[in-house]
Amino acid sequence: MANVAGRATLIATWGDELTGHDLEAASKGVLPADPRAALERWDEVRTWAASAELGTPTSIDREQLGPPSPRPQQIVAIGLNYSDHATEAGFAVPDTLPPTFTKFVTSLAGPDEVVTLPRDGHTDWEVELVAVIGRAARHVGPDQAWSHVAGVTVGQDLSERISQMAGPAPQFSLGKSFPRFAPTGPWLVTPDELDDPDDLELGARIDGEVVQRDRTSRLIFPVAQLVAHLSEVLTLLPGDLLFTGTPAGVGMGREPARYLAPGETLVSWIEGVGEIRQTFVAG
Image (cartoon, rainbow, N blue to C red; front, side):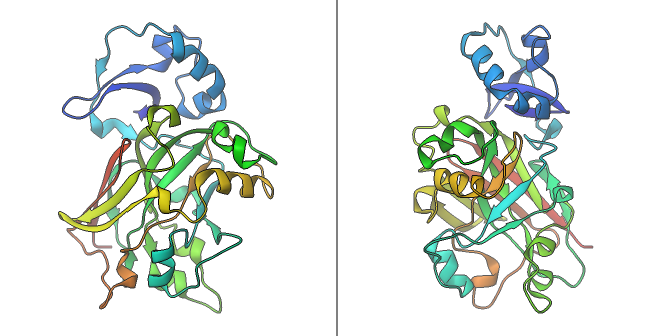
């Protein structure tokens, strides 16, 4: 499901041609047009879509795509969830609880964006699998966790390292919440559409150079475990986003360190899901 100009749309084809079905129109008004409202009624959407006769899809302009979940009440992010990334960041590999922080919702953006780099900053890249909640989760076990996930999408946890590391303690949430520092998309893919939702290649490239590549099967805490853990502390709500962590290859971990520069283009992808693209300009 995509957010096309603010309307929930079921994607029919993607690649050389992008087509889909407007959810409200295809359901003859039974289901809502608003993507947030559709996620709040996700069980109804899934039940209807399983037997719906959708007819001929209409063409979609990719420039109309917005974040698949445009107004999440919570964006929860996980740090150090790949062993190699923990090592390159200079931290011990977590063995019991994953480091958790938030990206503030005003940082949310769509799949293809122009991002203004903060002045005098060091902006880094972090490709991540993002799980979108489709059913409220509270005290959910790992064996039930995936049933509370509407689908997955591609995310970038863009991070301004100077702000992140400033102060007597790291300011993760502030350093990762500048405008458009949470691009997601291009759409939400339901777990049943993937051969194995726990084993997907993900990666990123800058101006064609691959800077990150790994598989989600190497997550220290996989999606089900994260949902279960978080649901013991807070209530995950329909539309919430869970950034699951980034693999090795970020700029901060390189010798010498490398950061995003004006004019560069960052493309991030996940196998079976799609890709997002950010171009950077000076602040």
